[in-house]
Length: 242
Image 1 (cartoon, one colour):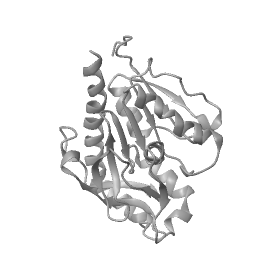
Image 2: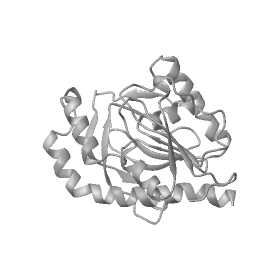
Image 3: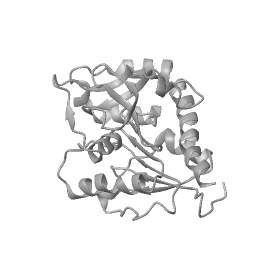
């Protein structure tokens, strides 16, 4: 993809651990011709004052809470106003979606009964969710979180769950929040399962063997939808800039 001032080819990718990767999402974007600019504000990387040189921004997940008091996290939540103000595509995944909800004035909190989602769970796409791109919204997705949020004021619900209702939403024309993890590959899943055994002992978590069984059943649909969604998400902005 040839970059121009009006249609840059870089994607700003925000990660929260030293060895985190953008997984499937990163590979799909690179295959679509985009360059990834990886930033880790938690470890001192700055975030840009403007999105002028970027086609879009993605904030991924992490083990911290959107309610934590660290200065870097508060600055990152505030920074989300940059792509929103400039009407640039923004995608928040898990923690990134919760940060978007916090930026929009919504609360983020644990389940009242202490439930978590770790593994594959059914969600229920809305009519707007099914209309999002030319690939049907996946109805079983990979989750790894202990907190959730209500739909921010002015946002459009794209998919809802049973224990954590807000699973996907759109705010404005180009900002999206996904509570689930479309970026997860089998290697990422293995790493999380090995390093986070406490999460698997919490209420509502799926046992390890179910993660692998359900990956075989559902991952191909998530992969196909992810590719179609990313193309639509970026194309919305490219059409405006052209």
